[in-house]
Length: 383
Image (cartoon, rainbow, N blue to C red; front, side):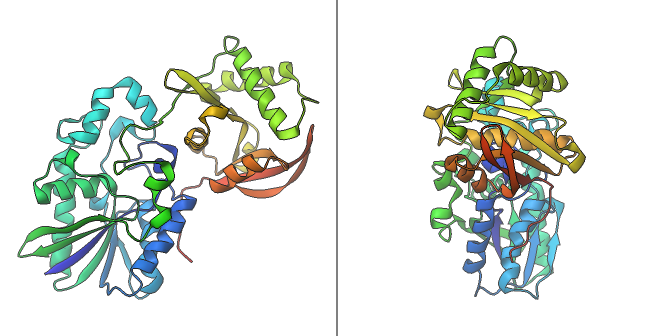
């Protein structure tokens, strides 16, 4: 008999930015790091004989929780423990997919045996490979206890198979939730599913206002190009209100100058000037400078705006996610921006997403903080 603690990875970029990242190799978030620390405490005194994870960054980072108090273990990886490959959906946005093919989006959540998009992995194949990986580990660790770090869809698919329960009737596990599986006589049995009692206020579901199924209907924005001159008035209004919030006045604000720069950025790459749509309206925008900071391997956010009545719904994080996706494709290692030293709300927002202060600069309207977010994919290890 072999006991498995099957653990979902900590919150990663796809969870925060609301992007499907099946086998896309993304980092864990700031909240994810705190979840890993909580997971370590949960397993502090639990005997563990083996440690395995998928070979993706977010699971390997999460596995460091087990190593914290079990330093003699060696982390092994197996691609068979990976998340489902979502094919052409990889690193897009859930909002885009809702708008383009709502039926396939629904099937992915409720009935993935009927879900298919170009390049995607069949549901039954996910079930077979995860089950096969655990049975192989059971042979290698008879009479032992093994911690295995995998992914939400993969764990839910296995639980569906082992209990003969329709996939859509099972909730998604929260980040770092623990599922107990027992292997005996060549068979697997589900003992418990999705226990996240160690998280408390660190729950991803709690932070994002979700209720048990993080693929359900939520405020998922859809980025589309902001068109100039058609969207000129909207752009100027957003930029002027951002300036006002940062400096307390409009001294030094030049609409013509910033419109010219925005048109140049969009001309270089339409992804550099986008508005975010939700519920039939525009809820925010982002402007990226494709050249500024390139010599330092950095991307630059020139403007990020969320409508005041839409704040607190994670749209700002989704816009930052768009910047991460865009600049990572360009080979940049970080993202930078300026924030007014007096704009406490903006400073708190960016720091919560992992931005750190690099230094100070003098802006047209007053002193600024230069802030940076590291976006280079890398395994994070719990200290």
